[in-house]
Length: 522
Image (tube, rainbow, N blue to C red):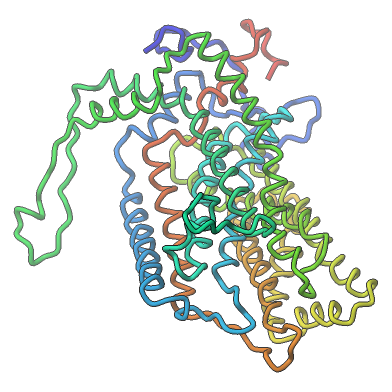
C-alpha cells in the first residue's frame, strides 16, 4: 500500500473527542442534538482512519452474508421473468399490452418516467449538495449515484420496447442512412434520447471517477492477500442429484483475481499528490456539469406531455412540477435502499447517522409540498382559464373512472410526507422506511394518472377504460428485478461509501487538530 495513505495500521490515530455525552433517548445515536453550540458528529463509534477503511472495504472483502445469495437469487429470477416478457413482446407484438384507442401510451411510458425520476436523487446528492458543501452527503452519495445508474438503465429499456418494432429502435438516433430518413428533431421524444443519454453518461463518469481511489484501496488490500485461497461451497443441489455434486466445493485464488480486476478498474491510481489534485478538480467540474442536468432531463421528459394539445397535458407547470417530483421520488428510493443496508451491514450505522436520515426526510417534506402545490395549481389554472375541456379533464381525474388512482396519488404524495413535520416521524427509522415505500407508490400513480388522461380524448365515441395485461405487470416487476440485481452486485463487490470523503469529515482531518485542543473542533 502507498505510504501516502493516511490509514496505514502503523500510523497512530490522533485523539478523538468522545460522543458519549450525546447518547441518550432523545438523540438516538448521538447526532440528533438541538444544541446550536455543538455540531452533530458525522461519523460515530470513535473511529480512526484505519477502522473506516477496514469497515467499508470489509463489506466487499469479507465472506458473503447469508442473506445475500437468497436476495440475489430472488431478484435475478424476477429480472429473468421480465426479460422473458420483453422477448415475448418482441416475438408477438405490442398487442400483448393493454393498449387501445385512444390510449396509445400505457405502462411503458409510465414506467419510463417513473424510473427517470428515481434516478434524480443521485445527481442531486452528489453534485448539488457537493457544490453547496453539505458534508452530511458524504455517507450516502455513492449509494445514490449507483441507484441513479441502475434506474436510468431500467428507464432506457422502455422507450426501446414501446415503439413496437424493436429492431427499428436505431432510427431514434440521427444515423446517416441510404434512405435519408431522419428523426423529427422537433419531437420531444427525440429530445428524450439525447437528454437521458447525456444524463446517463455524465452520471456514469461521476460515479466511476469518484470510486477510483476506493477501488485502488481494494486493489492494494487484495494484493497483500494474493496468496490466500477461498473455498466456495458446498453447492446446493436438488435431492435427486448425486451426493458428490451436492457437496462439491470449489477453491479459487479469489484475492488474486480481485487484485487484477480492481487493478484494471483503478486506472493506475497511486495516491500521489498529483493524482489527488487532478481528481478534485475533475470531480468539481463534473459536479458543475451534472447540476443543470438535474433540471434539464426531467424538464425534457415533461415535454413529452406538455407540448401536446391534449387537455390536462398542455400546461407550462409540467417542467418544474416534474423536477420536484423526480427529486421527491429519488430521495424516497434512496431511503428505501439505504435503511435495510444500514441494518444489514455491520458498522454502517456509524456512517449513515440518524441526522443524515432526518435531513433526507426534510428534503422529502419540501419537495412533497412542492408537488402538492403543483396539484392545486393545476386545478386552479383549469378553473381560472375558463377552458371547459381543461376543467373536465381534471374533474375526470379526481372523480371519473380513475378516481381511485388519483386519490391514492394525493394520499401518498401530499399527505404522507407532511407527517415528517413531527420530529418523532422523521426520527423513527422503521416509520421512515414505510413512508419511503408509500412515496414511491404514490409517484408511480402520479405518472399513471397523467397517462390515464388519454382515455378521454376529443371524441366521446372513442372513450375507453385502460387496463393493463399480465405482460404489462410482469414487465414492470421484471424491471424492479433488474434494478435490484444490479444494486446487490454493487453492494457485494464495490465500496458502498466514499472512503476518502468520509475521512474528510472526521475530526482527525481538521487542519488545526492537536491533542486535547480538539474539543471544539468536531
